[in-house]
Length: 598
Image 1 (cartoon, rainbow, N blue to C red):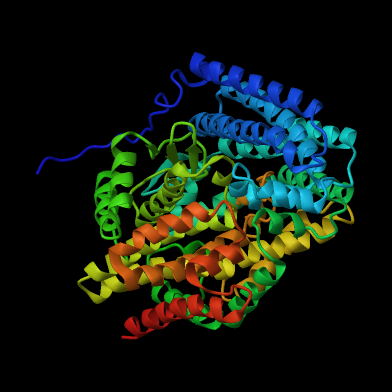
Image 2 (cartoon, rainbow, N blue to C red):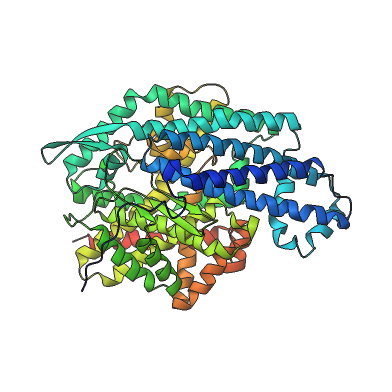
């Protein structure tokens, strides 16, 4: 059989030729500027719709807004990719500033549109949404109307938008550049290696405990050295967010993230209530695994270690072959998609210094493509990270046929497709396992994800809640941030994790994503939601792929409660829904303990 070889470096020229010096990209930006200019002109003559006849003025406006969003998404994804592969690319940083300027102009105009819609009488509004041109955007337009900044004047909206570019979002970009610029010296097999933060973090799954331990403490010392600088970044991001919320009349720090995730607070509270009731089996799993590693409690630096020692290295080609094979067992469209991603250079995995530490998937809606970024160094964890990001890319693929504004789905659903893809891999690998040791190895990897979602993500949620409560009263010191992190970890892990990283608030990038406050609970929601979907998939076999695609395509045009009711027939404000997923995970923990009992 001919050996297949894939590029470890992605191909961005298929999107825009020439990287940060691309003339094609500049043409794209000129078109974007022109579209925003047209929007500005249209809004100057726009008045509150007073009758159904005025829908003729609204339709082209909505279509232009949808087009601008696609152009912005295309541009932002390209810049994100350039700065991930080379954080020192100054031309790309300059282009990012230009994109941010146009995005700010666009958001100002969009805020005006939303506000104008709030003044439309209810009967006129309902009649407009029943027209052929607008009825498919009913959910989005109602969302705009409901979430409009009614308490802000146009001048205040403009000021906030301007400040976001060079203040708020700039802090998030500064954080990413700072982390990417850090180099780490670590002893591996008697030799000192100079690594990026991403490469050092990858050592958490190294088979040698001494390497894991050294990487953990070297990183902790770096974070300690720079804690004051990072505390300034997180305090400034949070302070800006709090001030804007106050201006908008938003009293709860969770109100905005819940709206962005199209989720009721009751749904979120019910989910955490059920998770808190089921933590003991996962504490027992951590205790058993710790016994297997060194006979003591679970140290934070041993969490990602394999339960069964294995020196096996998975090459990128092997990972690609396995992923394609396992995805083919689910459905032909997923198989065909992932083949295309590997063959056409959509994936950047090269293990090298001076690249971003953060894995991600970037969507390019205008060209119907995605790009996946990570550092691959031969572990099963790397393969699962790759699968996770390919799940995001498949969601983008599913949305290709969806019109305009309905392409944008909330983060809570974004994490569903990625988790669902991981389930496919785990299930297929478990079926192929020929020994007790293999089953233990696979169950361990699966349970790590349960612990991450039910304990680690919970600790992030608790930390962020407590941090914002204190930040509301003033600056929170680095020392206090460490205390809050430690308290949150101990509570979320039910005391089952020893020597935790009190600097998790520093190296967890989600706290610094300015577009998405509380980017934690969407992971847990997506994880449990994916379990429910996967249970349906196992019942129906390959026939389920069509249903799965329909669910993904609906993800941008309804609330999460409506989506689950429509496609699964379940009420996610009830504990019964969440308990079904939790029980599946508990069975994994019980099976792990049973298999390792001898």
